[in-house]
Length: 234
Image (cartoon, rainbow, N blue to C red; front, side, top):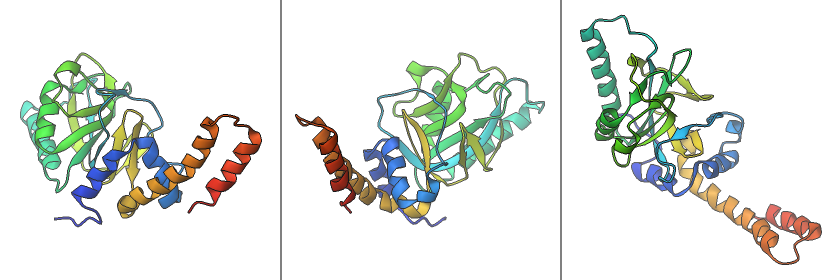
């Protein structure tokens, strides 16, 4: 079984903050990640009001514009292989599924059935450039970031457990993913446990500026003072 420098409780704790806050914290604890490692295009979100999802990446690719060209038995074997891969996770997971079609989202992999199956296998949700449907019938608690499409078309699993890229975010097997209505970000494994302290620091630094900005009589001189005071917080 893989060993991780964090626990399920550490991942659960990260759900206390939205994804932009996590990105802010990464600027402190992993500054080399500041310009990459997050989604850079908008998603449609199945449940915009849901709390963030956090888990280990289970990565795969799909196509839907044309039939797979495989036999029915081979398609079934690929589907079972994918499910087996998703199920083999020691901690909660997030599916990151790259649609390889020239027009991503031509056919919906996600709907009532696959959301229920993946939730049962330990996945909290999916981040994809592909599509989902059955919005009102998705498994309770399962989140999807993708696009909406009413049809399956010829959707099929291509492969899994290889690097993928979704909306500019490069993801590898077992990467830690944090996602919400804003998008998604990869958290380096070695900084997962450092995020809470970084969030606390940034919250205290921002509070000085916010309190000043919201107070009566705010002006440029008070802003300069607040910025200086914020810089002194460590």
